[in-house]
Image 1 (cartoon, rainbow, N blue to C red):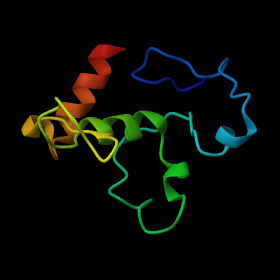
Image 2: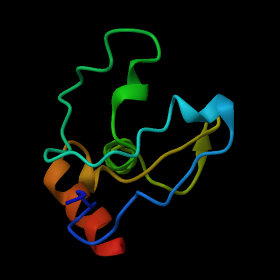
Image 3: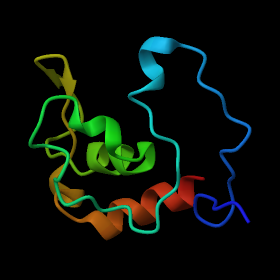
Length: 94
């Protein structure tokens, strides 16, 4: 039995055609979507983090969410550091 994201979405039929992106997008679902920063210690370590966890980490950034600073979108501090809240946001959006 293949594992699915949120017990709903299978990634078996998804193929990444771009060879440059293929090794940086990890689609395999994991039971726990909380890496604890283990991928931050070495260069390109985020390649081993599931793509959904990376999306949740992007949601947890702080800021007002209205303007850009240095090319990065700044968001509100309401979800900063709240991994379970970010998980629920992503789960409900799928």
